[in-house]
Image 1 (cartoon, rainbow over the protein chains, first blue to last red):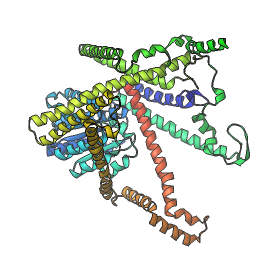
Image 2 (cartoon, rainbow over the protein chains, first blue to last red):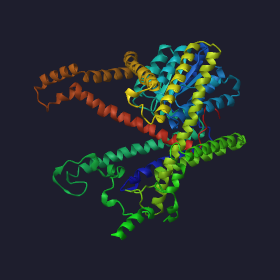
Image 3 (tube, rainbow over the protein chains, first blue to last red):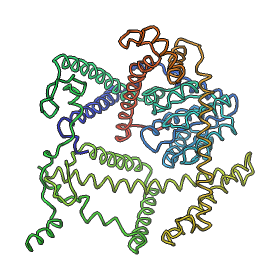
Image 4 (cartoon, rainbow over the protein chains, first blue to last red):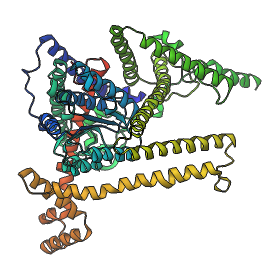
Length: 313
Length: 309
């Protein structure tokens, strides 16, 4: 916590602020240029191209489209998932395809209901909005998994979108949806679950493709600008990795280490590790030592009894 | 120096205790009713706010809440601070005030989560009670769900109240009443086991998913299949032993021989450290950057949610 400013800890703070600056600068640039965002090239993301195909198929079959925003709470990940579902719903509303949005968190459920009803409203198709299409199932992991699997089986969904924070239930959803022949588009911010989705689903959004989705689908200047900012951040990180490798390599060429990090002489020379490099130390502050803790006075309420005791003695 | 911050409430200051009361005391009930009244007043005020003003209010609240957490993360917090000590300066005092605020904000969030859970339960009741009343398809499942939910709620609350009233006298198995037996049977005897049953299904799903995924269809799937095969074999004792024996036969047991690099274990470790590890880190960086950008857009209300324009 407080040790963040001790030693070199402020460097990491400055780097995050710089990254945030990149994102904000590009958003501002995109808004100022008043472009539609169509002039910025975003590489093809197969999973997102498949949305219309999946909904079209559901419409032809007369079956619903299932959306699950994971089992995480209301945070940036679930909000992004709901944003993508907003776009899915927009297409589904035009085709009059029924949707099912199953939530495991009450806060996500309330926001989801707002977003979905707003989407129908913005399309002027409010009469097609079924209030029960957005459901809270359970906040218990496997009860939720059971509920969603039951919905998949009973309603024979034609397309399933699993986007958000998933854990052990990911494969249960994916395999159940596969068993009813649904087209599946999935994406999780949990790297442990991505392999399961890759093995079981038709299309998978990997890593930041998940966050790029709304920019890809809507081309809103704010989102496209943010995406460009993210690319700037990536390039900066790549440059830092390169510089870090170079600095570690050159520092390790300077011979073995003869003193400990505290400056004490070592009994025998030790091989330099990555942790000895200046670049590593710059990003990894040392824990404060006892001597670094400043002396503070006691509060008056705390100091009074001690004073009395002292007086008595 | 910002010494004017020194007057702000600290974690140990008495004025924060204003929000706390002993459980079951008159003050606690009074504060609970006051909180409900203020909450209802806020909800009423929000409902009666002109629609054009709602967005600015939400934007302002989002910004303030975000700014609080942003400052909590950014602001330096005193090193080695002990309760009862005076902060050295305004910076330390403000840092401590932010720490205190985090606890209060956490409690506010808990209350909001509790209120939202009611909406969640209402959603479950509306969907399933509606299906049961209208005798729609699979109404029997909805009835089972409603009955299960009610039974669990009744036994859960009854057991809690019984424990509070008896001051924990019924906590030992020998002194259990029907409420403790009922809750134990429903929760540990049924719910936990059904959870475990759902979890165990994953083992079979892994097999069926792997069967579909590990097929030679393209160059990528062949690479996937090969690396998966190496990983699986290297973790199987017999295959790993066989590979080591073959390599030992080739090298004559010389640990410095180049061929040792081709044992199943060495290849597995090489794949893990040189291919899998860096790839996962790269993916995590992507997620972190995306999350940061998304967080900024949400905090500053730059994001327009959903498919609406």
